[in-house]
Length: 91
Length: 185
Image (tube, rainbow over the protein chains, first blue to last red):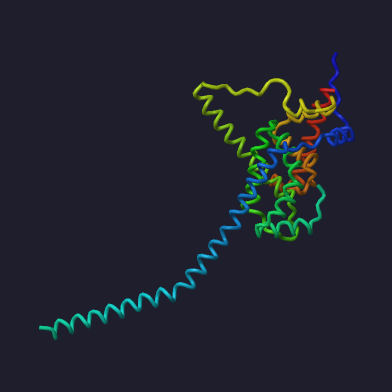
């Protein structure tokens, strides 16, 4: 009668597991993976910077835009008045 | 892979600010153990390479917030394991669809896996083979502690389990591995 093989002892299993070698990527692949991840990192870094620039631009330009629109209204009113005067006075 | 917790917190803070040097430090420190983990989990070096790339892209895009008690190794292993589970799910879906079409039949690759071919001694070769024969959940459990160097509590967090439940699973997985090795030796 064939006997069932006995399992490894805890100590022996620990010893065998400790023997497992650590592997690593081939150098070229490792460099490629690092570069790809750094590109993502750079994009993430640029993202908030662009948003900051956009927020600054809007904040700084808003009064100027309001002033320009206001000036446009005033100019239009003046031109309209001149036109009305011209129509009334000129023969 | 023993890294000072304060240094890790510093790396994380720098990484969140987009610092490349911090990323390089993390990359060099954890690359071999994550690659080894994914290689043994998937049994294929090409798959492990693709999955590892995904881990680094996730770290670069969404690094975890540094906080007291957070260590990088469990976070990285959790991402690696999630990426592997997604890969398995997609592969099973693909193989089911192709199986329905009856175009391709998926079989386990015959002969030794790449890790067994690389093994330098008979003892390591049989261990690689035994690990490959373990069910995926058992393999993850054993590898997180043995190859990943995580504590059982950290490994339990990676698998989303309670530490005592994880210890039971680890004990069962080790017993299965010991049986397989006993039968092979």
